[in-house]
Image 1 (tube, rainbow, N blue to C red):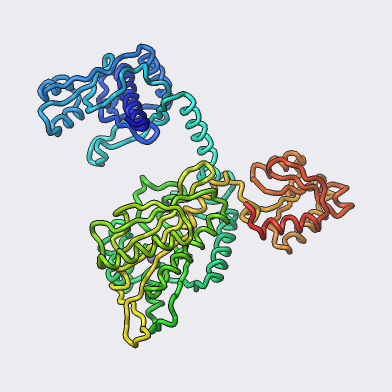
Image 2: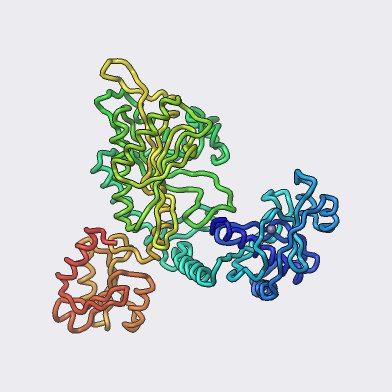
Length: 574
Ligand SMILES: [Zn+2]
Ligand SMILES: [Zn+2]
């Protein structure tokens, strides 16, 4: 047994102990299932009343008693008939018994609690050293919305107290960085029931960060030979029939709208628009590769239950691009995309990343030969750029192999990042050709790629990665001027004008608050530079510089500060 097998067994055993505690605290409780999950476990209950967070410590206390009593987990094999007697009055268990294929089933008992279970379990409850109940959620029996809603308690369990403490510490740190919480505190974005769930409003400060990212993104793409385009937000339904989205992607599309008797869809993808720009005239092989980029806003239906802040939304702007190239240009193009992805990952300060190459699934478009060749090309490109990668067998989308890069944030959590996807399908469906050197027409090779994913998700990820303390080049307000008294206001406004003229995002805190409270406010807003202005600063054309970390750089001449902050912005220091 590996240590992770043991951990899983341990976690599942804790779910039985929790069920035992719930049974003793809630007579008449009915039991669903209680599997181990990543880091912990859950159990679903049908209870006479709704649980509240205050119930969790009571259940934990009862569980601790069970651990102290070191009750053995006793396995027994019984007939289905016997099992039906044991679980009389437990409708969910009876349902499960009916579905089990064998005549014999196994039950596990510890103390007064017996569960229908295939096992295995740890020897006794005394082996459990470290667990914690985290939260309560509603969950339909069998995940089916037509079945009764049960109450699910989630918990975590580890082999040792130290591991549990470390986990809980990380959880607390993640909660502090939650982009929904910071989004409100830093006035970055909001989501309103009146507008609709999953549709974000970008406030001026969030919009400033986004605009900074977008300008940088556009400039970098232009440098690398991309052309930037715009396409409309709605298009006739027929184009989505040609692309196959209407048929294959239906559950994520919004209903059509009628325009003069013609159905239109709000766009879920940017690809068809780019294809039609390509096809607006005959393309010669000499024009290829053609790289077409767009910060394209798309809308996709997601169930309200899965929406989450900015990271799972219904309307979002992809940093999209499509590359149209000749077959023998594919390798260099993929290398170019990976180089750009690496540059972005580094610039935005992500310490590490994971790369996966997904290969041909069972159902696929194109020929075996096309797949083998393209997959090999992606592999060679990964080798050329020196990315360590793993193969994800059969996980490619039906229309072509792809490379996915997962960003690791400051807490080591993974975020979906750059994706590069070869497409054998759309060039066929849209008949996307080029005129070859031989004078005849050939199918073009098409690549879809994004390096940030979507502006929404990437921004949510950045907020959490930096805990809201954006690097200077991204910070919505880069410096705040803090005059000590009203007589310093004139000078403060002059400095503001001067810094703004030099491209620094700066504000004057002109409120009649005390200096310390202004500094505290600036620290809460995570503003990189606080520039305190008093008599000496005015006399010497200087500012006293404090960093948000609390570090005090002392008095600096205005020119010196200007040079310092501009250098930091230009270098995109993280
Ligand atoms: Zn079990
Ligand atoms: Zn596309």
